[in-house]
Image 1 (tube, rainbow, N blue to C red):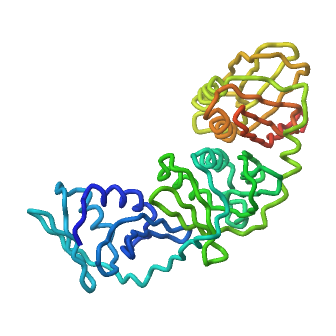
Image 2: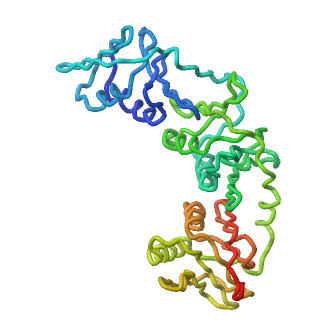
Image 3: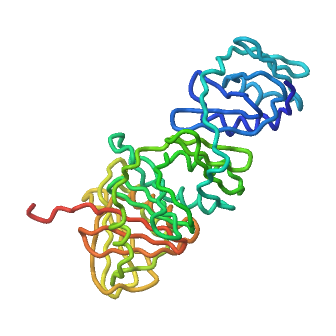
Length: 357
């Protein structure tokens, strides 16, 4: 099989991080396929009349380091030979039978987005996914079309909740592994997304340009998130407009002062003041900084929180516009962040011991 080395190498680079250890990329029926337990990724590629074969990772690395414009791939039995003008590499390979990928059903499209707005919205919430394996549904991102005309995109680990939405008139409820959205954004190149069912009930296929990502769905027993989202919609007297970059920079400076310690961060608001104070709670290595806000609040309040979690939420909220709305209503109540682009973040506070406890 003859191939343009650059075109082949560019596509293999997109697939390489999906390949399982001791496996490789499958060449079959005009496609190159890589897979792992979470998902499989295929790229369109003219394989000519070549038999099915698997290209190991070592051979992929070899192709990336070749200088030829055109190369030849010669698979046979349990090996593959890669030839350039003046060099040749021979590599052991595995049987193509190890790959089992369901093709998307051509007439069962669930959603179509012409640009990357859906992917950006989905990636904005992934930081809130759980890492606890006993909560498999919360390790992914929920796509929920229950609200008419909207697709809710939700992630939560119980301490953090992140929500976004896009216009959508279809019907879907599925939990997608968070790694799938990062991968999709890296390969979409502005081509938009088409989501289809496959012949497997537990799998969906995301098509973008010349690539298709086959995703194994997580358990669909995501908790009832709607009361928390409704909480974020309530009007509060303590909504402050603040620059997310200024707050992020202050949190970074607080982190430096903490060193290896990770004490809680306290945010203090004074009534009718145009600043908010950020400080650490460690008595030996302390930090304090005042940040200008764009409005005043009616009620003095302080709240403690995990600084790393707050930074994640601010990065997501301020990705498109650094001007955000922050709601702080009390020491025992969630902190809420909203952006003009539709992102909503919620962070549970840390309970601080009162004197005498």
